Image (tube, rainbow over all chains, first blue to last red; front, side, top):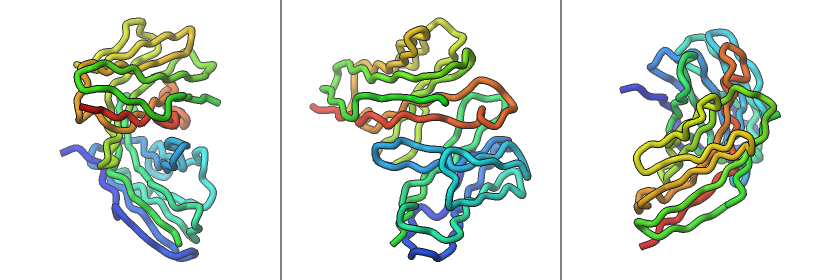
Length: 112
Length: 119
């Protein structure tokens, strides 16, 4: 089954404790992105990747890092999480020849 | 920069009735795509319908159809014969149509419209 898998689904952590949210897709997609969803703001892009070793900032990259060492994986790293990073996070992937983006199930992150 | 505006934070419709969700966007591009996504309580993002800007014909998918007014930069979603399962948050989204550029991977979302379906 074609899918984008994020882990964990829920995470509560403390300020400053490094964490990684994993994202994996099994569709051989070139494009992958991370979004955060906040009430009243919709979804905003954090980082994106066009292919292996090619990443760039989206609209709200501060406080986040990403890497793309393999085509299928695109982890989101919070080196020193802060409470303003409490949000719902989505990973998405898309083929370069398709219009349809596939989303992961979302990760609810709470930073206390 | 492109922006997407959904001016209706909440809407309500009775079961079996028709409802229209509004979306306007701002862009200087001529080649782009527009989407409506549904987000039920499960939080999953589900693509409902998409429209290519170069196509004049409005897209339809079963009970879902759009009214795409390119000159007015308007992209409304009509849900016919509403069902209880249609209750969700609906997001309008925009993406540039140029391939192989970084920003072509970005979806710009509106702030969403929460749809309630009543008996």
